[in-house]
Length: 132
Image 1: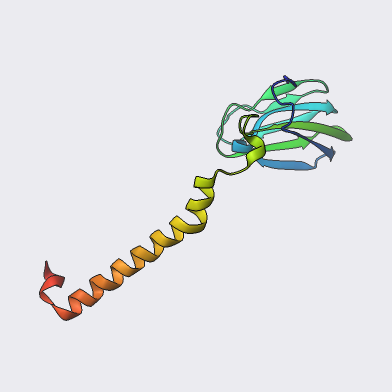
Image 2: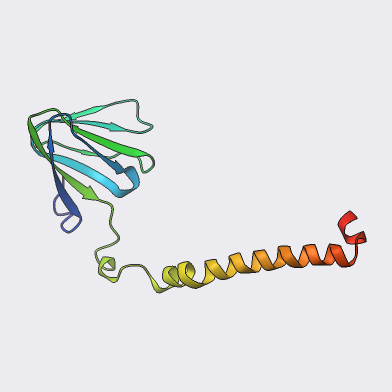
């Protein structure tokens, strides 16, 4: 794993034999065994991966789950997380994303419900509209 490429976006996990860690593939870019051997299964990939101590693999897809199981008595896996550009990762979600989630989406849902209610009212007032 290129530690210079993922200097701030890694997380280490300790696993005992036959314990699994399930992560979303969209959140993982690569993983490395710091200690012990790992068995890695990725949804939609017909190959399983065995990662020995000191070895790493890149995650080839961004959908489904990544299942990591320790096959050694104790294993430590370092997961390189998918992160935004280092230049903007400290900013968190953009103002536009926050506005969309908190204001625009609820407003759009309200408008859809209002339009449906107006449509029902119009057909009650003029039944010919229901046939059109």
